Image 1 (cartoon, chains in turn green, brown):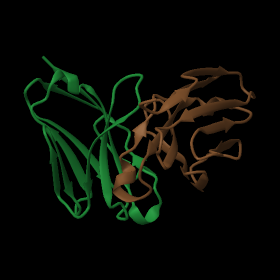
Image 2: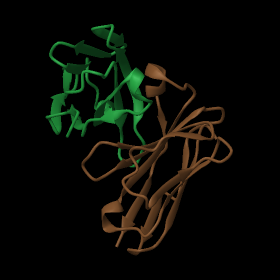
Image 3: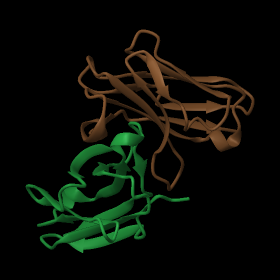
Image 4: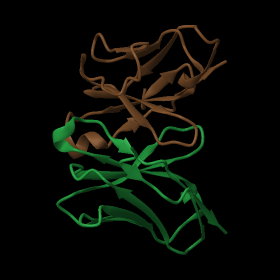
Amino acid sequence: DQQVKQNSPSLSVQEGRISILNCDYTNSMFDYFLWYKKYPAEGPTFLISISSIKDKNEDGRFTVFLNKSAKHLSLHIVPSQPGDSAVYFCAAGSTGGGNKLTFGTGTQLKVEL
Amino acid sequence: GAGVSQSPRYKVAKRGQDVALRCDPISGHVSLFWYQQALGQGPEFLTYFQNEAQLDKSGLPSDRFFAERPEGSVSTLKIQRTQQEDSAVYLCASSFHSGGLNTGELFFGEGSRLTVL
């Protein structure tokens, strides 16, 4: 039972354009969400997070949007840069449910010149 | 060190062998997590420590898996009688905080890639 789903295994975007990565979840107990970025042979690194009391959080070129009614979140990267090419994981957690995160399967983003 | 350190980076084991994977978290970090990442999948939770206390081991797939953090710093994940399905990258992560959104901001190590033949 995949509680966090990233339905697009890969995404290709031109440099300078917007990258939109999507994530859906099924567990209504999740109340915080995070995006992690992973380069090959490295561990995931934290990118941006959002609490369920917000619908948007912005940090530089990165914005995360949360639609609680649709159980959907998205990560927008604008403008996209070649260094953004990596695997992006969506993750969710529940404040009352312990400290573990549930991760999606990841989306491989390729930013082309 | 500056980050989470894991060793060995790569381990090849014959089926039935025992393995031990080590994690050295960032100094002062209260929380320590182990995750298992199979090929093409996202990390899956195995177990969580707050200091030396193992507060959640619900993700350990079988009683062949055992983790400890005796002094609240370095942690070891031990897998007994390894099976081919244990082949995966084992990620360790630590966090200064002990709950909620802040806990989610985990610092991951590079992982230990285990291959069981």
